[in-house]
Length: 141
Image (cartoon, rainbow, N blue to C red; front, top):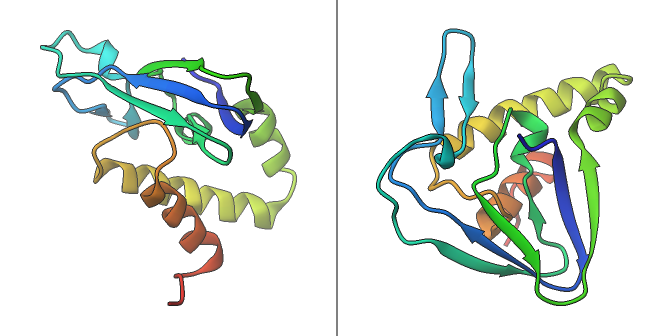
């Protein structure tokens, strides 16, 4: 399981997503959770490879839900990343009631939003816009 989110500060990270035909969502009696495509024994679809740069990120979902990685990330140039440990992040957030309430609302909306998208565990313009609009409001053009 993943317990970290990663921000790329410099360099390039190649991420290869192992595609499968099943959905990563699993409904259980308590809550909606995310599971890896790798937890299903299905017919594979073509893999998808992306190269991520500065200001991209990986595995935000690990902050909001139990998560098992869907692919493999490897540095293709010398790279610097920042790791956010999910447990430490949660411990800090709960120390401030207002912040905890805001982050809880964001996490709920994040997980709901991911159910509507073709899942991928790396940053995208849609994911970045979702976060910007949640915290800063809709973009003004």
